[in-house]
Image (cartoon, rainbow, N blue to C red; front, side):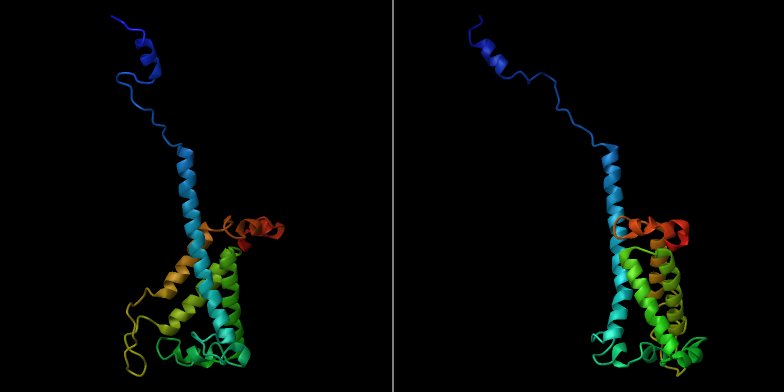
Length: 208
């Protein structure tokens, strides 16, 4: 026999139905794609900035003698030569004698330092990545030849210290520069997009 309270009990829980299951809303495919794209672009930008800082820091240390690779008081502004210390000790590889002859030359100092500064600034800011990739790759190739990893021994007969006959950090840096020029040109993380929008850059895509 029904009681007056039964209708009120039923109306209090209208959402409970036998066999009903909660509705799950699937994420939009567009949202997932945007998230993946954002992570990828941020990762590439992080690599770009760190790699650019490697070149930029080398320029600053060699210019001002910050006490890392270049001792205080031995910087370029103090009259030191950025190339003499390295090139004068090249004693392995097919260009050893040639590179020793370049050591301390004014033109070599200026080319080397200009390259470090130009590549460093361009890569950190994300502008001119194609030019930076070519310039940086040439620099890395010359430094690779100077150290000549294929050799197990120096001209003196001492062990060269090489741990790999081909792949070292010069090769990795060069490949990273080339990859950045291929995928990070015009990136919104940095000044790449604004740079690519300049009239002179639009007319000359190789400047991107």
